[in-house]
Length: 496
Image 1 (cartoon, rainbow, N blue to C red):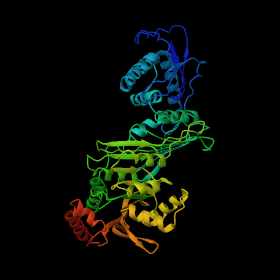
Image 2: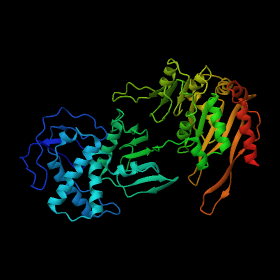
Image 3: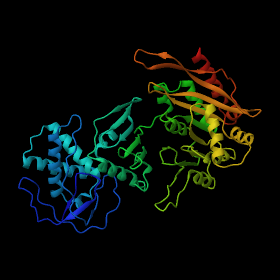
Image 4: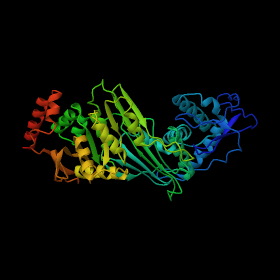
């Protein structure tokens, strides 16, 4: 039997027993009928959907024209797609790896174009081949965007509007989906890879792509104008502190100071707004963790990419359709204390789990790290106090402050500036308390001094002149006090 399906790449393939259709002489011999398949399972990346008994699929519907594509192009694509599905054996295609399946599809589509005498330029033919392969095997119209390494974010606002962020600036693309159902099917394909679902009963979902890129989906009825898909992409080549120096995110002396802070097992909170580079910076700092340390990460969606050999990755779980079985971040942090960790890394602290993280930092798990949404180091401290209060802990305010002071050593503030650039604006120590106020001291600051002719902000990192940080004794314990003193001296020279 030959599979029948619509142009919507997310639809389930249904079987239909047509009369045998021998392929024309110019094409390859017809493919043998396949044995019946088991009930279909969730789609895997690069895998064709399995067939299930159902009514014949509706006729292919042409996609609306996008900028740069004519209506005739989409009509031709619909005809070729229909002929392809009549010809190809889906069960055999499902057994191939992604690259082989693409080659098979390309060969058959070229045959169809030759036999039916479609008048197409080479460029149009290549575009059509890529579109059809992406519809069947990938994420449809999103594939060209996912392949670009210069895109930081992909934002799909319904089927007709897709935006990307490149170089810190947001711009609209010509990418369009056939309708909201095609977009929703692609969202389902993405979230099913991590065992999650998105539908009217569960319209909000966090997931990830195989490369670790973060995905958020919010579907109707919550999203009024159609499903909204947001993808925070990760670069294929992971950034390092040296590259952050080249980009101007931190000065050379500041980067060395961050290396020392990570090396001597200071407890670090990375603070910043959305899109400021908190996760990127956290990945950079984890590179300086010793290879023999046992690290446990706790995240809502696993996106940290640590290079050490001894890493245990934990991920929260949303409730099932009955509203049961939820595993929260707090559950993970509490459980990882029983897993003999040397460092605990929490991808993003949003609620009462901050109390468990602070307790872990203060009870022998030095060098633990986490990220928090906040606009300054002082606001970061206030947010931690607020999140502890939200958890229902009936602790005096002074006790909460003492826990924070005894747990957090350094706050690194990241910011996304108005020109789209990302900078580390503060490296701040938590020193102690004066009365009921937590005292801090800045080691490094970033000052904006103006902007250039292109509208890019011009600034500089400077040392505040602190010659002996509060973690000096810790640095001496790890044999890093000489390097620390040298870095602080270099920072003074840089500042002058």
